[in-house]
Length: 105
Image (cartoon, rainbow, N blue to C red):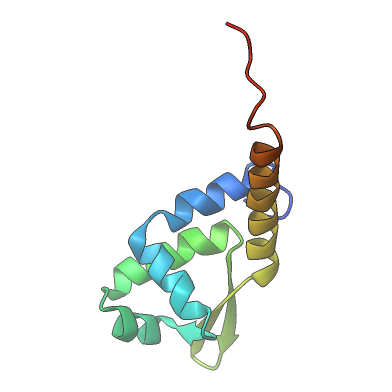
């Protein structure tokens, strides 16, 4: 799924980031590109665990992979995060604007 074209992309982002390991990976990548070995060392997770989480984040469009020599560096897709944040901000604004609208039972 490519995050920029999916209507459910913000929900997918929230679902993915609800996992503590994925949230930690995203937080670590906010500091700059890293390869799997960096994330394993920094987060104390196993290599297969980090790889599986990176695959899910990549498929959702949150993380991009960039080959560099014999390693692959991962970095955040800031546009995908901005799109999800904008959607959540719009939902919050809509909720504030309609907080007094009660439907009749």
